[in-house]
Amino acid sequence: MSKTTKNGIEIEESADAPNDSTWQKPNPKGDWCNIFLLTLLYIIQGVPFGLSLALPIIIQSKYSVTYNDQGSFSFVLWPYTIKILWAPIVDSFYIPWIGQRKSWFIPVQYLIGALLLYFANNMDEWIPESGKPNLTMIVCLFLVINFLNTTQDIVVDSWALTMLKKNNTSYAGSCNYAGINAGIFIGSVFPILLSSEKFCNRYLRFTPDSGGIFSIRDTIFFWSIIIFSITTLVVIFKKEKNINLEGVKITIFQNYKLVWKIIKRPGMVIFLIAVLTSSFGYATMDTISYLKLVDGGVSKDSIMVINTVMLVLKTILPIPASKYVVGPKPLSLILKFTLIRLLWNIPYALLIYYTPFLITNNGVVNVPVYYYFISGFIIGINDLLNGIMIMLYNSFFIKITDSRFAGTYLTLSNAIRTLAWITPSTVILKMFDILTFKKCSNDGHDCSTTDFQNICNTKQSHNCVTIVDGYYIEVAICIVIGFVWYSICKRIYKNVELKNPSHWIVDMNKPISVNI
Image (tube, rainbow, N blue to C red; front, side, top):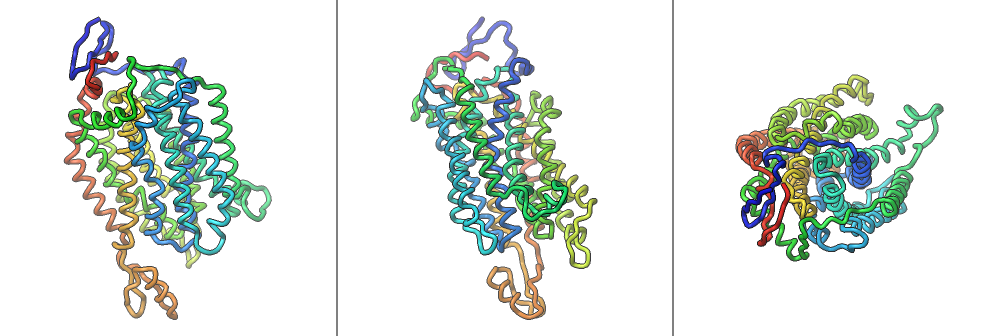
C-alpha cells in the first residue's frame, strides 16, 4: 500500500485499487432493501413537489389568472434553488444517538405531513368553486412546505452515500429519479383525475355518478397520513450507520467555509456556470407548454391523462437506462441529448400551434384519440430525454462528491442544477404577457393587459384577438440561446469529465486519509 500527497491531502492507495480514471462496476446484490427504501423516501419527497406542479394547472383551468400570476406562483419552487444556504447546518448539527440524517429526517417529515393536513382542511376556502383563489395563502404555505422538502432532499441525498455500498452509490441517482417521479405522479395526477367527475365516469365507474371518487382535499389528506406512517416506520425499523469518515468532524462555520472551498476547486466555477445556464435552450418547452395546451382547449383531465402515461414511463425509465447512467462518461451523453432537445422545440411548438384545430369541431372541443398519440409521442420524447439527463447529472455529481461532506457537496451541485431549471421558468412566465400582443377586433385598440381585455370583451361583438403569441417568440429566443450555450460549454463539459475523482476532494488544511 502506498501513499501520495496532493493539495495537502494524504491519499491512500491500495495495491489492488483501480486507477482513478476507472469506475467500480455496481452490483445491487445485498443492497436491494436499501435501494427500495431510498426510492420510497424519494416518493414521499415527490408528493408535495407534484402538488406544487398540479396547482398551476388547476388554477389555469378554473380561474381567470394571468401568466404573470403563474410566474408569481412559481416562486414556491425557489427553496430548491437556495437550499445550499442551510445545507451546512443539516450536515453539521445532529443528535448522535438518533443519527446524523434521521435527526433531521424525522421532524421534517412530520412537519410536512402536518402542513399538508392544514392545506387539506383549508382548501375549500382557498380554492373555491367560484371566485379567485387565495394565491397569497397558497404561495406562503407551499413556500414553507417546499423549504422543509428541500431539507429532506439534503438529508436523503447524503444518506444514500452511506446507506448503499460504495460501488452502488451510482444507483442513488436512479432511485432519486424513479422515486421523485412516482411521487410527482401521486401528488399531481391523483388529485386532479380522481376528483374529476368526467374522468371517473368514463374510466373508473361502471355506472355514472356525480362528482369524483375522491376530492382533491381527500387525496391530500390521505397522502399526508401515508407520509406520517412511512416516517414512523423509518423511525422504528431503519437504523442509521454511524460512520464518521476518516475521523473528520467540522463545525457549522467550517461547513460554510467548505462551500467556498468546493467552489474554489480548479474548474468548478466554470463548470457550475455551465450547468446553471444549461436549461435555457428548452425552458419555454418545459415551462409553458402544458398551460398553452389548456389555453388551446385541452382540459386538465386530458392533460393529466397524457401526463400519467409520461410519469409511468419516467418512473420505470431507470431500469433500462441504468446501464448507461452508471457509465464512465455521463457528461458526454448529456451533450448529445442537449442537441436533440433543442431541435425538439420545433415539433413541440407545432403541436401547440395546431392543437386548437385538431381538437375543435364547429366550436365544440372533442379530443380525438389520434391527438393523444401525437401529443403523447411529442411530449413523451421530450420528457424521456429530460429524465435521462437528470439521471446523468445525478450520476456525475455523486461520482465527484467528497463523501465526507456529502450533504453540502451534493446540495451545492443539485441546487445549481435546480436553479438552472427554475430561473428561466420564472423569467419566461413573467415575460410571456410582455411579448404577447393583442388587439380588440373591429376598433383595433390594444388589449394586451387584463383591464383592456375586460373593456374589449364588454363591447358588443368585440373580441380580444392575439396578433403575436409570446410563446413562439420565446421558443425562438431559447433555441438560439441553446445552440450558443452548446458551442461554448461543450469543451467545458468534456474537460471536466476527464478529471479523476481525487481532483474534487476538498483540502481542509490538514492531511486527510482518503481511500480511493
